[in-house]
Amino acid sequence: MQALAGIRILDFTQVLAGPFATQQLAQLGAEIIKVEPVGKGDMTRAGLLRNERGRTVPSFTTCNIGKKSIALDLKQPAACEVVQRLLPSCDVMVENMKPGVMQRLGFGYDTVRALRPDIIYCSVSGYGQTGPGAERPAFDGAIQADSGMMSISGHPQTGPVRTGYFAVDMTTGLNTAFAITAALLRRQRTGDGQRVDVAMEDTAMMLMAPQMSAYLANGTLPELLGNASPTRQPTADVFPTADGHIQIAALSERHVKGLFDLTGLDALDAQFPDTASRIHHREHILARLYDALRVRTTAEWIGLLETAGIPCARVRTLDQVAVDPQLATRPAIVEAPVANDGSEGTVKVVGASHTTFTDPPKVQRAAPALGEHTDELLHELGYDKDAIRALRDTGAVG
Image (cartoon, rainbow, N blue to C red; front, side, top):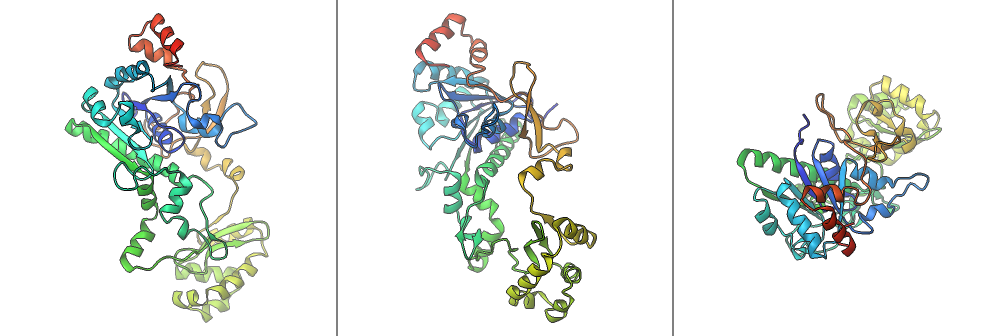
């Protein structure tokens, strides 16, 4: 039995952070009912990071596998009545609209709690539900800039840079899944529901906890270090090889000596015998290491460094990572059905963030077509065929 089997979640989220959170919960057995606008649906259906060669929109698929979809026009009272009928059967409601929007739609926390007293009501936003900046619009890049993440990422020559992936969005998704699960555990113990407030900026603070804590302790702002270790040791960096790049993290005295031995730079060990002297002469040592490491291929250096017990990794491209035999033993990349109609065909997607040895996370169903489960859910709520036809005729459902 999976951890969240029997839990029903009403999901009003779109794009990445919220949908990824509920996708993770779906893989643990929760039933996710995704509420989407009639006509267009979730914005990622339009093709954020679209795979032009295939039938799927990867960014939508990977964040929505395992869900059901109901299409509603929440500006119409008849559609809102559908939500009112659904809520009493739901354990959790999740939304990531701008603070205040759900209240205006008639589904603020107090209203929802009146329909389901022990509801877990989770709001995901850029800056939180309260405070002077709560209503500011937010997206991943803006949070990376506003939180200070970009100020500690980049090279001195180029200035601040953002990550090449949606670091805050995806981590906020995991943070949201964690918060919801914790609230469910609390409810099991106390019988009480809870309002949960997850902010992207708070998540960014968690990602920067070591750097922010260091600043709070000593008041020193970190410098842009490029690919260097925050320790500033020249033996921990990304180095060019004959055919690519390798990341080396030689931080202990044993690892530093081993690196100098392997690269033929033994004299540096005697010349700079401790961490402080190596940091003081950082640029000189880096230049010597760059020259020495360029003479062999990445694979050759990986073999030598791993044999010596020195932490290292090749800088790989995604096509190389996708065929990693170690990843093949993990749940990170999984096969998901393309459709829920029993037809053949699968698509590879990023799956769960962890596994267990019993009842592990798994893909329960394909990502839904827009409104694929509208009729099913309306029938469950007591609407007959004529009532459903009338809702469709008015555009209240799709």
